[in-house]
Structure formats: C-alpha cells, structure tokens
Length: 307
Image 1 (cartoon, helix red, strand yellow):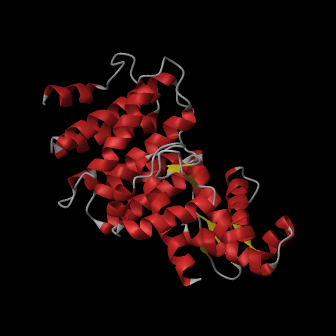
Image 2: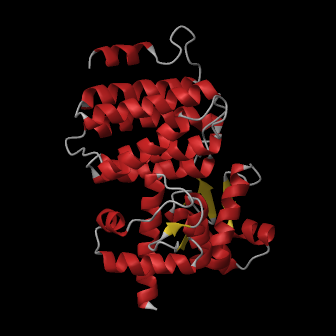
C-alpha cells in the first residue's frame, strides 16, 4: 500500500509537469525529462508511469516508452477519480455547479448531503479536497465559502490586476531562471496554433496553451512563494475557464506576445520581457485591441525596436 501511495503521489507530480508543459494526447512522456522535473531518478518515474497506465492516463506505443493517453485536463480528472473514487467525483461536481451558479457562494455539509444524496463523510472529504486545491475555505460555524473564481466577470478584473502585480515581478525576480525544456514545448505548441488558418484555432486549445505559458513563468520565478501563489491562481483559472469571449485576432495577438516574451527571456532581456508581460495582461484585461496597431500594441513596437 505504501508503494502504491508513493506511485500515486509521483503520478500527481508527473501530471502537474504535463500540465505545465502543455502536453496533449499522444505526446511522449520522456522519462529523463520527467525525472529532472520531479527531482527523482528514472526508476520511480518508470513505476509511476506504469501506475498511470493502469489508470488509463498513459499507454505504451509499439516503439516503446509511454505516451499520454488523453488530454492533460482529462488525465488529471481520471487520476483523481481513480484515487479518490466518489469523493473525487463529488468535488468535480461541486466545482461544475459553482461555476454554473447552481451553488451559492457559501455552503455547508447539510446542503451538499441534500443536493447530492451523499453521506456526511463523503461531503466532508469532498470539501477538504476542494480546500487543498484552494477552491473553498472554512468559515465560522458550519459554513464553507468559495473563493472568487477568475472566470466570474465580477472577479476577472481583480484577477488581471493581481497578475499584473505578480507576473512581471516574477520575471524580474533575482532567482528567475527559464525552464528551457518546458519553454521549448510551450513555444512549439504556440507556433503550431499560430500556423493554423484564420478562425480555426479552438478556444479550448488556446486556453490550454495560455495556461501552460503562464505556469511556465510562475515555475521559473525562482521564488517559492511567488511560484506557489501564481500556480494556485492559475489552478483557479483552469477550473473557471476564464479565457472569455476572445476573437481570432486577439487570440493570435496574445500567442504572438507569448512568443516574443519567450524570445526576450531566452536572450536574458528580463526588463523587456516584464514590460511586454504588462502590455500583454493589460490588453487581455481590456479585451479591446487597438485598430490602429493591429498585430501589436504601440509599446510592443517600442520594445521590438529596442532589441
């Protein structure tokens, strides 16, 4: 049992890495890369991949090794369902119902028992799962209060303001070091989306690579508190699906900004990267790209000229 628990915990770390890399179904799970990311040897990685194979998350192709058997978000859901059973499923249902405003901002265990026809123990475990994920907090008495989700229009501006305070500063952190392996994967997927024909980019694909890019910045900050805070917020963004009603032009513009930020970072031009990150977040917050500067905001032109 202890061995299974270790494999399950390492499997969660692997899926966390998979999310950060922006991998998709069919992408190869490279043992060496995962071992370096998870800071373990390749032997436990191999055991954890076999565990994921048993959960239907990884599979062995004919040429050996392992590949992702489903998209990353689905992989996370499968692992949680496999390890958490009905408790994990209940937590996911609670999140869906809260996002759809079928649940109030505050609930208690009795509410969940009545709504989902579950035991008190199951409701308690689901709430504790959500608490660990930063979705809900214990309040006075028997109440639990949901965190404000970035996808809520009332909270979206606050989410961008929060990110404007932290993400550029993460780049300027003295310990910032770009994770080159993840950066290469993010860049490759971003350029593949940009190569698609006009109006053919799936918003879900954009949302996935957008999260992968911003998680890359968080992980590279070199400051554990900044990384933890931003990763928790991006986790809420992922659950809320906060990409909004973006048109094809803004999606492509945002992806191009991601690539140029990566360019600056790879050249150790951190001030320029931080400045463009501010521009990127402000335009995304306003969601009103300038017609006069179609393709790049004015400051972005200035940044490019300064290279």
